[in-house]
Structures are given as structure tokens and as C-alpha cells.
Amino acid sequence: MEKIIEEKKQGQSLVLEQKEGNTKKLFIESYGCQMNFSDSEIVASILAEQGFNTTQQLEEADLVLVNTCSIRDKAEQTVRKRLEKYNAVKKINPTMKVGVLGCMAERLKSKFLEEEKIVDLVVGPDAYKDLPNLLEEVNEGRDAINVILSKEETYGDIAPVRLNSNGVTAFVSITRGCDNMCTFCVVPFTRGRERSRDPQSILQEIAELNENNYKEVTLLGQNVDSYLWYGGGLKKDFDKASEMQKATAVDFAQLLNMTAEAFPKMRFRFSTSNPQDMHESVLHVIAKHHNVCNYIHLPVQSGSTRILKEMNRQHTREEYMELIDKVRAIIPGCAISQDMITGFPTETEEDHQDTLSLMEYVKYDFGYMFAYSERPGTMAGRKMEDDVPEQVKKRRLQEVVDLQQKHSFFRTQRFVGEVVEVLIEKESKKSDKHWSGRNSENTTVVFPKEEYKKGDFVNVKVTDCTSATLIGEAVGYSNMN
Ligand code: SAH
Ligand code: F3S
Image (cartoon, rainbow, N blue to C red; front, side, top):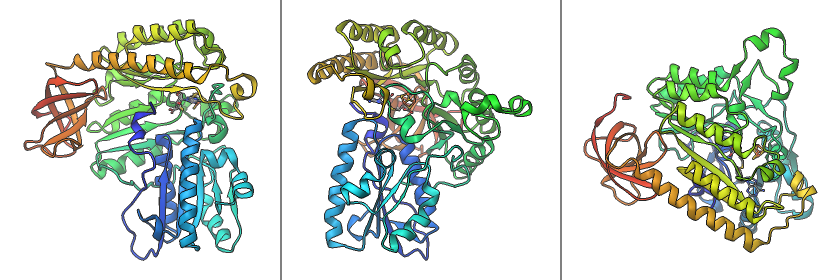
């Protein structure tokens, strides 16, 4: 099972409003995490200034860009297949240029140009502002590459264009990179060191969304709880900041509080939280504000303290459980979701049982579960043997998925008979007479349309449910409108 929020969108080509006077055609496709989809909106914005309008027709494109993911081997294989497809099209349309963006570009660097010879352009996640220069080189017949990682780049000054948006919910990135060095994870190598974005530019971007009638913002980062603004620079250099900078620094709890207070009619979510960095102050901000959703994505990866140590996660099973207890005490009813990896090197049956029993303890509302995939260059890739047989990884994964399914159903059922506040996002996939949206706890709710419209906050009485969806009837507008 792959990460659900993005799975539906994997490989989607992005289209934005056509800018008059632009004559060149860009086909841009994204894979992987939400950050990649967000970055593609920045890339499209930069290229709109260079005369490009987006197209969904691969065959007519002057420039094809693929924003790539390296998190698991499967993600990279998918991109390779797409590159083959682009190359076949290139034979028909020889002037077409192909570029690789994102994590695979960063991981494989010039290998793409030297060995594979199927791309013209390789651009890492911190180099998108260099695209105009790189395209110039390509047009002069040279291959072009920029995979330099930056200490400062947050793209805070670029207004992303919203591609394929529902016009109601949007993502706003607040940090880039990650300093955590989990031993299985390629992200610190492909996205560089952690840096935070200026809160003023975050508030500015949300204000624009607000003016355009957006109703929900998800603050985005590899590790949002670690957000720290002290005037710019890397998180790891905070020690060297001046006393003044330290005194006026803004952390994640403060940022969340600021956004919730500045925009009381918008709803806020955030992703992803890391247990080691999640401070109690954030829980109090969630509890205090109705417009901060009661939902925390709190990946744990394993329920075994020994495996957590091998993964270089900075907490034990018991510390994680204490954090869960705190969440339950401070925000009663808060939904919690997990990421889990099965078959990490040396994982025994006993470790696996620890994972299942931790899940029993938490009874997560949702989960995103993966079999371990060794990534070259990571600490686990270099130092540990990938010793759990594939079929054992898969069997454990299935057990984890089955248990999660049971818990999801248990959590969803608790809403039956209750009234929940839903933000209408779109028409239900199954019926054009029903709306679909989510409650504060991030569960999908469908109900008859009546007089309500997209973007309304509606109170819905829940009458029935499946393991993933609540079914109900509207009982009136909520006071969030
Ligand atoms: N902090 C990030 C996590 C990035 S990766 C975020 O914002 O979501 C997302 C998830 O992929 C991780 O939590 C982990 O469960 C999974 N993952 C990462 N590396 C993996 C690997 N080598 N094999 C299997 N799953 C992996
Ligand atoms: Fe990866 Fe761990 Fe950071 S999972 S993104 S290194 S918190």
C-alpha cells in the first residue's frame, strides 16, 4: 500500500491557466510526495515567465519534465518506464526536450546524461530558479545539469500556480530538507539540509489563497514540528544565531497559532510530524483553535525499540506511547495516523509482534504501510544487510495492513450518530447527487448536495459508514462560514 493522499494523483500531468502570448508547450508530470506536487507548481510558475503554457498532450510538448521520487525502488522504476515512453515520442517529435526534476535527479545526477542519454536536462530540488539558464544551454545543443543543494532556498518569493486544484484546499510548504538521518531514508541526501521559510511569506501566500476563496491549507514539510525561523539559514546553525535572532525566533507552535488566528475562517492541517520533534506546545495550539484540525500524522515506522534504534529514530516505543497518551489527554478525539515499514534489516518475528501490539495500543485512524526497500547511499544501505526475505516482508506487511483496516473501521464507526463539520471539496466519485469532503479528523464524508455548494462548511449528521467513509445528511451550515 502506497501513501494514499498522493496515490490517486501519481503521474498526473499538471495543467494551469493559459497565459496569453505564451507559445511554447510544457508537459509536467509528478510522482511521490506532496512536496513534489507542490514543487511542480513552482516550476510551472517559473516557466510561465519563459513563454511556456502547460499541456496534457505529451505528443505536442516542446518540453517534458518529470518530477521524480527516490523513496523506494518501485518509485524509481515507474519513472524509468515513463522516460522510455518519452523517448519513443521523441523519435516522432525530435525537437522535444526531456528533463528530470526532483529526488531522482539529485540522487543520480549526471548519470542520467552520461549513461542513459535519454534526457537533456537534470535539475535537483533546490535549483528550479536556474531553469531559464539551463533551458538556454539545452537550446544551444548542450546537456544541462544543476543539482546543487542550497542552504537558503525555500522558494518563498515565488507565487506557485495552483495546478489541477479543487479551488478549496491547498498545500503551502514551510520547510525544505530534513536533518534527521533515519538510516533507511534517502530524503536527507536528495533534499538536503533542513531550512525554514520566512513566516511573512507563508502568511502572504495564505492571504492570497484566502482572497481566492480557498478554505483549507495544509502546512507542508518533511518534518514540520522542527520548523524554526530566526531570520534565515539552516536549522543546524541556530546555535550560531545572535541573541536578538534567538529572542525573536518563531517555532512551529507559534507559526500554527499565527496562521489560525490570522485566518479564523480557514481550516489548517499540517504534515508530516516527527515524534522526536513534536512538542507539547503544538498539541495545545491544536486544542485551542477550532480551525486547526484534530488530526496528526505521526509516523512511527516500527513498534520495536531495538528496530527504532537501528533506524536512528530518536525515541523508544515507550516514549512514543507517552506522546500518544499526551495527544489523547490534550486533544480528546484527535485522529492519529502512521507510516510503518516492515522487514527492516534484522527485524525478527518478535519485533514484528511489537509493531502489531503498538498498533493495538494506538488504534490508528489511518496508515501508510511499506515493505522495506534498500536505498543506495543511506546508512542502512551501506552498513546493513537487507536480510529479511521478500516474502517475509510481504507477509508482515499484509498483517500490518489487515490490522490497520480493522482499526480504521473501529475509528470510523465512532462518528455514526454524531454531527461532524465537513468542508465540501468536490462531487462524490460515486454519485453526482452527493458532495464529498472531510471532517476535522480527516475522514471522508459524503452526503446529499441539497442547496450547499463547494467550499461551504456544513454540519453533517452521520448515519452510516464503511471503513474509510462516513455517510450522512447535512443539518445546516457550520459557524465557520
Ligand atoms: N518526513 C517525510 C517522510 C518521508 S518518506 C514526510 O513528510 O512524509 C515517507 C514514508 O516512506 C516514511 O515515513 C517511511 O515510512 C517510508 N519510507 C522511507 N524510506 C523507505 C524505505 N527505504 N523503504 C520503505 N519505506 C520507506
Ligand atoms: Fe526521512 Fe526520517 Fe526525515 S523518514 S524525511 S529522514 S524524518
